[in-house]
Image 1 (cartoon, rainbow, N blue to C red):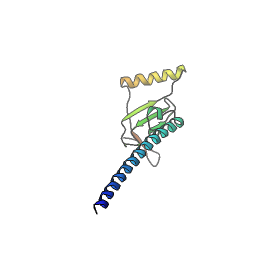
Image 2 (image 1 turned 120 degrees about the horizontal axis):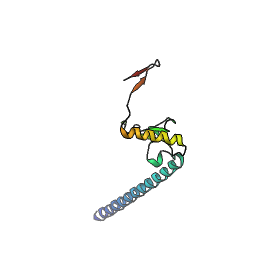
Image 3 (image 1 turned 90 degrees about the vertical axis):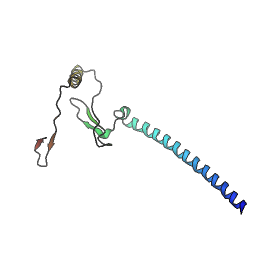
Length: 126
């Protein structure tokens, strides 16, 4: 009986080592998979992924800026930050517009107004 218990204990130890090795391999595979996924997303999404922004948080405007990003909206359900995202430009009128927006935001010269579009199409200010 002692021999069987000793063998059973050895089998338990071997089984535990195998489980530990399997978990280590799974974790290594997860890390490699995440890295590969990030690289694939960066190839597909050159705008948001490199800046660690969720594309689902972005709304397209194109004028006066390309995107307004409401950081945290999709994942947390609360907006942590509003980002005005516009591409680099050499066009003087576009650069002037970007500087004007930067100056207005920097000086706090803006107003936040919430409006809702109702079912009948009427716009209501809150």
